[in-house]
Image (cartoon, rainbow, N blue to C red; front, side):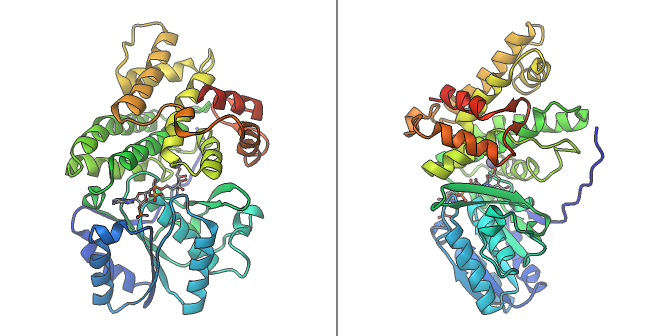
Length: 390
Ligand code: NZQ
Ligand code: ZN
């Protein structure tokens, strides 16, 4: 295994009623706060009022930016960065799902530079610093609450691009599972598929693994399989929501990679789908992931598929390896498409083959011409995987 540095200094307040610490945390970073949120779910749930009361109680001067879109647009980021500069914002408070958190992180970075925020993606401009970001998470999925990533869409160029850079790591995150009670069935299921995929992208690599981390990942996958149906059936089941929330954070906060090259394969493919069709990230991943697995299954990878099938889905370990592998993939498909009810093909969600060539090329270009994952994928391979999704 490779050496690695693990440094994730996000302070996490986990559990019900932890929001009472929000004011004291915000105050540490200054007086002027930019509150960011999405399309209004936080107003419906009453969270907006609770957050406002905390901020007022701490004597903060509050500025607001609402309307951050799912698959957040670069224009929202531009607006936020501009507001930070105009009002001399000290700290940003993102309240919402991954889209709000991601956009806010890039506003915080954009506030510290003179150039357009899209240059961070189109020109790979350096991210040397960012204003402090505090998050209140309302949807378990992306792990943005505890990672240094952020993904932004540019409708003009039809790009959806992400980067992971240390200054974007939230200073503090509030993870209260009760705030996810109001998340509907569809977003709950998409969130589960997203975190599952984050784990798989680290689990299925060609590098030698740490047994301890593999076991940890298998435990997290079993947690998603166990608790997502519970949360769908009973949205206010605290245990289910809490298990999903903490899994979302640990699936992508750097821990599971443990020195391995974290070779993202399904994510670059999915980001092209979201970029063109504006679909929900987790839905795209659910459709692509089992096809990618089947495409990568061969003599050189079968052992890992056996491990997955046996340890995650309890497939009979005495069966022949390829049979176990196929049953493992089928079990994952059953979970995504039957148990948690996501659509299983591109056709069902209105995606045809019209943009396959462009999307495949872009998915690989952003990775230097090929996707170097479990199997090295050229644009032609990616097109074949897309075909399998129709
Ligand atoms: O906008 P509001 O009104 O808040 O409604 C949202 C939105 O419509 C709603 N929602 C959120 N919390 C809710 C709620 N509805 C009811 N009750 C609540 N408690 O859910 C909808 C989707 O929200 P969004 O933030 O878009 O979802 P998610 O958390 O799945 O974020 C997806 C974005 O994150 C990116 C994705 O690509 C996508 O753009 N990702 C970010 C990553 C990262 N930072 O590391 C990694 C991921 O792989 C991913 O790419
Ligand atoms: Zn994801």
